[in-house]
Length: 254
Image (cartoon, rainbow, N blue to C red; front, side):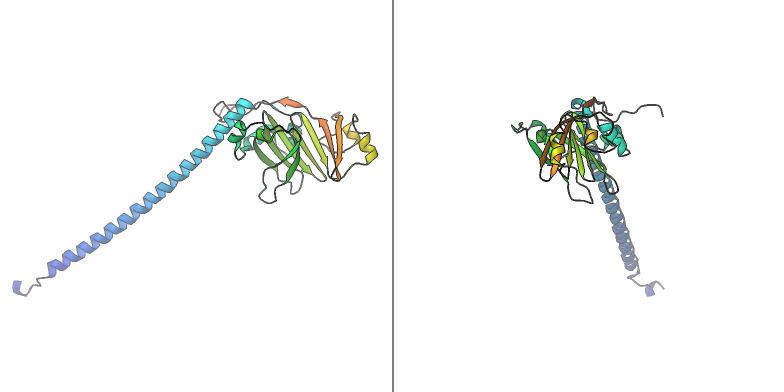
């Protein structure tokens, strides 16, 4: 029977074994490559998150060292939008080139200038026409209320202060460095506008945010078919909710 045995049988077995081994190695290599790719993706995401968190902490640490006040209207404006100062501050993100803004030379212009408020995902940017400030001191901002069913509310950090912006039906309210600008889309009657300076704001406009505050009009201007009413809004001290490293301060016990 030994003479009748297939001399190539062992070679065939070796060939099948080599093929199976090669296939197993290919599968193992593919699985290893998939695992390595998944790990690389996880690590890339973790690195991106770390960079984002680190940049935000750095930004907040800067704000904590430089921001000390807020518009006296801010708390009431935010409450009107069902928000509070701490929540609004935690929503603030740095504007583009905020670091360059810090070292940029001051402009010699102190007139009314424009800038864009935070961009809504659903709407075109809305332009704020009136800021008595240099543009270089804008640090960060946040949309607090989109304004689909009610007033649009946003906050901004300008220099050392938290400011607010409200855009409602027929008006916009902008605060800056203790002064408030109320922009009315429709011009006030000329006779009323001429007699507005020194009068109570309640005699001119009606809005729950401004009613009963004893606000006196400092200045009024008529232009572009609308009216600009300027009054002293005041400032309040502000304590930021982060430590010196820009991390949130946790109060209470778990």
